Image (cartoon, rainbow, N blue to C red; front, side, top):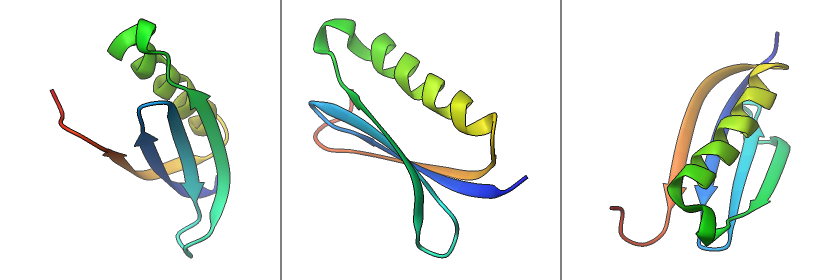
Length: 72
């Protein structure tokens, strides 16, 4: 099973989950609209679904998360 690195970007309007191959190439990308009405639970659910999708096909070597603004 191929190993990939996962990057998660949580923004005010969208969430992106990308996979990279360790050679600085993006090999997959998933984008979701962030719904403020769903709150943190909605965002966690979207990320969990994306990670489950990736883990079903590839071995996850590492995960990095980035977001702008203050964290509460």
